[in-house]
Picture (cartoon, rainbow, N blue to C red):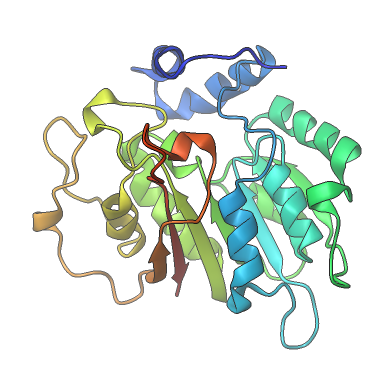
Length: 275
């Protein structure tokens, strides 16, 4: 069991781990946190917002027109709860993490929980395959173990984009554009949306305008203030013609506890993207 940390303790710990570090070294820093069992982001279950959206949106059905299973990717999958949920919903699900230690936690979760409770296939759904991959999201090496086309019909981002320093957002958006299949859907559970950008990260503040700005302009370096924390929306040009399109945007009916304010209002957003 990971130690319980307050919000201020979590922010201080993560900031101390990553502040001033070359992004190329961040993978090692995340792995060290896993080794130390300091994983305050672990909620021990899928986000209920993902459960709801998979149950409610017909365009996220797990079968293609020819009857074959769709492929799903969760980058920064941690202990793999979302991956196992997607498998139970009929997807061939791939969990990618840069930390070998984190992936061992995912394999342990699979042994303990696969096919049980939330992870039990329902309504005659055939369970999809589960594949764990230790690798770098920004490199193609991990795609060698992906069956068929090297793209995904569903990609899920929650606490992954916000874990990356803002300097990586252009390549983050470009990578999703590359990895999403022509008819695929990218689901972003947008978090944290009300955190002050000046506090820093991780997790870095990512209100909806950050997702919309970058995903509709994949690969483009966008204008931020001199401090590098506020996106200057008024200076943005038009979205790219080949950028991802936001086809849905709404507050989920429920989410993890970190997505609520002190009055019980949900601050998280769900956005769904397509080519």
